[in-house]
Amino acid sequence: MPWREPLSIIREDNAFRFGKDALPPDEGARLWAEFDAEMERLYATMAQGDETSLTG
Image 1 (cartoon, helix red, strand yellow):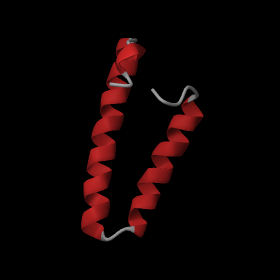
Image 2 (cartoon, rainbow, N blue to C red):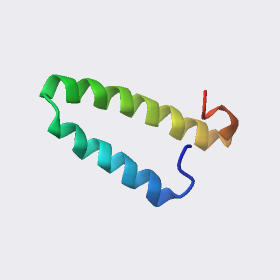
Image 3 (cartoon, helix red, strand yellow):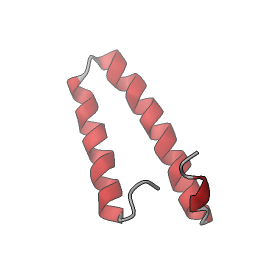
Image 4 (cartoon, rainbow, N blue to C red):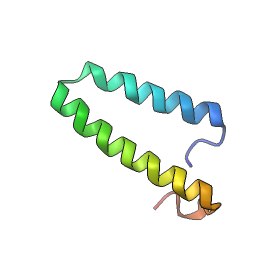
């Protein structure tokens, strides 16, 4: 995970979640889908305890 502290993870997730609303709806939805998929990958990797693959 690029952020080591849980509050940092939440803060960045929220910033992107609300920041996307400043974009045109289609673009915001597309970028949110990409961001959300990447966050799910990071959370899954973190849950497995394998932080070596978080950067790849």
